[in-house]
Length: 242
Image (cartoon, rainbow, N blue to C red; front, top):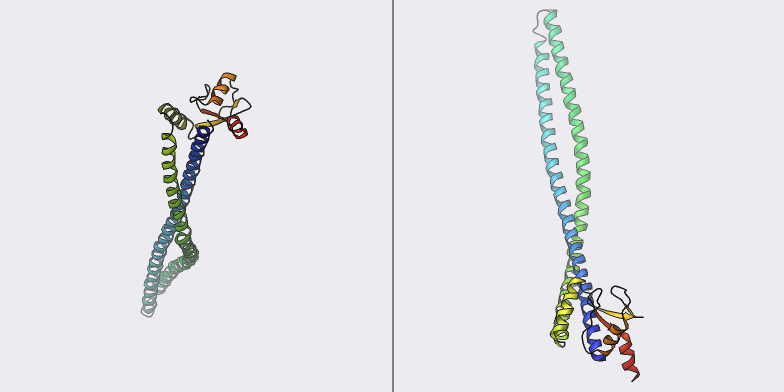
């Protein structure tokens, strides 16, 4: 009887280990995914900032060309002032020069604003580049380490699954069916102890007859309330005193 109970306990502990390892694999997989996604996000941000920088440089260059256009127009107008014949023409020419100078000033202000924008972009690019360098180091170390852990856990799960099959095969078909049903229903917790006449799965008080049948160990006893397979440490203690 003790051997049968020990096998059932080992079977449950076996599944508990599989559950823990599976959760750890999922956790590590999520961590790896988060690291890669964050690196990809920062890479995209960096590339977008690079494009923004290129566009700003083009815009600044166009503004500088506009300033050159205004300078040329102003020079031509000033050259014409020596050829005007009336005060009215001269005054009109000066007004036109003033207008071009005002437009030129607006463009030069836009150039200064664009240069400030470029400085801000450069600072962001520098920060992102430093972060990417650090993140790449993490990807080349932490991710590899986590993937090794996952591989080892997967190998251990394979070993435990093989052991589970051996343990289940040592029981009759009715136990296998009961175990698999409880395993599926309670996400791995198929076997529970009886302590002080209470099922440790649903914490309901069990009838004396059920407890006696568990202690006898002649058949699989299922908790009538939750459907888990019942075992008792009392049986182990009794066998150990013999």
